[in-house]
Length: 296
Length: 276
Ligand SMILES: [Zn+2]
Image 1 (cartoon, protein in one colour):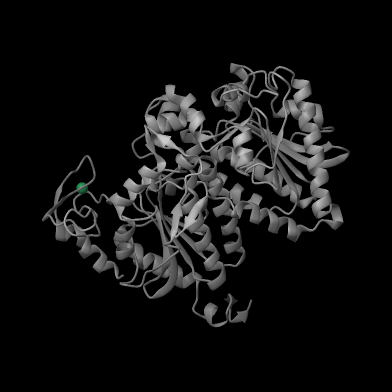
Image 2 (spheres, rainbow over the protein chains, first blue to last red):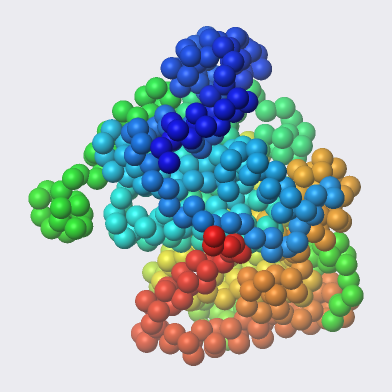
């Protein structure tokens, strides 16, 4: 189903395309009212304070990929409940049902092929609205399968990351997804297929400390929280207030942990350029990577 | 055996201040240990120690988280919570093990990676991620043993091994019980319930197929008879090395490709989900 149709069928109350004439900036210190059509045109970046509003996975795909180019893969994966986890009297399975209802998604990550500026690629896109895009078995499996497909068909991989970390409801299985995703990325690296990780607000915990942190190039949106421990945990442990911009993408850039901070309007051209640099079309014609015209 | 303990009682055993720590095991079970220091980038991290040593007559690389016994030592060792330089030192030692063909033995005992701003500034997440990737393809046999607390990514960063052992009263979890209770229920006092819900005991973790063997502890726990506990782990490590030798060969006859392929499959296969 084309993305646009999907949005239009969502109807009133959809978080993706507000029917209201006005939207409000998500920055607590701004809260500016913005004309909805202008807000959409600005890719949901506040024209007054440049705050980048969090995007659903579907909205991200609509913004970042070429129109109608996304073809989903591994859509059939559904989470299990290996611990029989219950939180505040609510079984994990009910929590998942709520999240499905809220987001229209089966899990916190969408995977599929598509194009950016006409370059073929594979995208993994997280949706923070689905249990904080936490990584359990399905997120780990979708990442692993996406990576393995790219090892096979050599499509460059772009992961649009967001996450509160590993999903506690699946316990040790969630932790092990960190090893699983990292192990598959070792094979992608050996196959010399590029992996670009775009870190969006917020990308923390076991996701930053596994696949999201392993991109050949790490990009982040302005102001995105990027780190290992969440700010609340750090403040609890150290009993000290963090400086306001600590762990934001600009802080990570300054400390040498990421390559680029990229405004949302520049993401397509930047990724397009990187994709063309690291995946020359001859690579596919030869059925493998080529260097300076020589077969690898 | 300490059966009949609740998960929260296990947590107390796993964290017991008289429980043997990494350097105790190394001192008791290994010969000719030479502790090596530093990540060659920033600093030496006393929360993670390691170096070459001899076990059962052969040279190995041994490393592990090191907790402190008192407040002064813990100011130095940060309760066994490594900073990025600790993980980078571990990686340096792993690479050295690979270079010189030494089996790698990792002893895991940490509440988690150090969660402070200095660690964030130096790329804690990326240091852990890099270790996960590199351990998955390290070209020597690897053994990890969870000897106390196996806390989250900070534990896993030295535990992506061919064989993983777990002491009977050790715990292995995605986050500390306190962290889980705080995040899910905004109440640290509910940590005992979190310990129960997350299924973090050796029996549970073994039943899930995440660890390959559970090492028995003396009655009353490892802290009740540390010498006995260390002896048990020593036997288990020797058996596991023998088992790896038998499966993959050793030295010049080591079948590296099969070792790596089996290690990959072991971690690639973990996960519980339905397909359609
Ligand atoms: Zn604003």
